[in-house]
Length: 457
Length: 71
Image: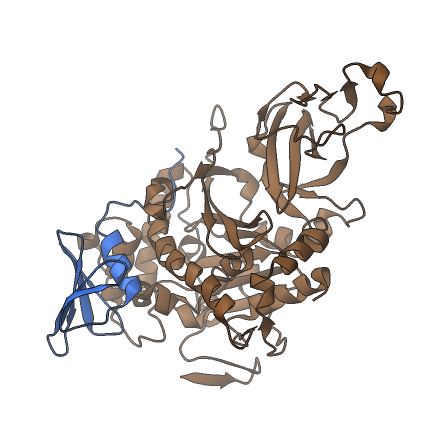
């Protein structure tokens, strides 16, 4: 049943709201202040044109007007710890070399030889310089020209004008961002509220413990949108209804680039109604594989949410060697997901330490690339920082074949079973329009406004 | 074999040894057998929730918790 919340002038699901729960818990726990507020605005109820997801022309416009203009996460700093270490970041029809050119300097270059355009590097690694495999043109790591074989034949190529064209580089929270637009504003402005919010969850102190990538049979925006609302949870992940306040989730939008949802766990779905606390706790422990389900017991006067959070605090402490006994319930178990336009989704808290990235697959509007990273808390005082997980390209259609992401793979399998049907259904649409809810899908509407500013339609 | 209960439909899902899923309607006792992908194979119960079929199949495996250990 939907009720009208006069204070927010919007309809919302019945039942206890995330703010009611978090404000109550903040009376006895240290709940980050950024989680104790809401930032919603009604942005209209217009439909989204289907062509944005299906049209090859629209994908080409994105390649012309969007991807060369926006800040986007290219890699982790920890992936290029030594001078000469580099990654290749491909986006749409572009390819960018991201390299540590000096101990404290990271640079990014268009990955294309200035001779006849050959990719300088097909994949990441470590090199003393960038040498084109075709004719041997060579650049230093700082982008200056090192050598042109038979230079007598290129009197028109002055060495001081033959530096590799650069992209802008910025870093935040251990991530390296690039922007192909030399006139783009600084990354700090682009990030809007993210640094303020993530001071509570410093991702620079995390280790990329897993990294799985897969080509999906849908447009990159279809994929993004499957992961920025919890409205789908009761239908696509019905097993979660026992312990997930799905349609009671909170949705926030900030500026032009950032949004988030706060999805409360340890309470039943409003679609399910009342449920006893023991059933909630057992279902969560069973599905999230946290401890012995038979040993789960909700004491008189306590709650499933409290018991689950306690278990997670203990597991997180044991797994990292860090004392998480004071971690708030919401940081221990809830789904708190941020989105940074256009394709970067870092999760807050510690219980579900995910980062998603979505990319178009070349210029194909019907496929995309999804990446899942797990960001583990890094114990202090380690003699050496463990290496980050290399990327695991998943060839199969079963995310259980990526055991490093645990039970997350089971939920992703359920999500995946929708995506190809969404893409095919969009092509078959008679209305040529996508219809969105005013509240639960506000993050989709919010980023489409920004997208339209770049693409022009 | 563990039984997975559907939160909304008053049905339960049981992964069988041959990889199919037996679905039982607890309200009237009807049953159906389905492939994990949703195709009906036998029985009077002819509709099942494709996401619960998937879940019944996948959750029977040995997946671990999400939070990775670093220590």
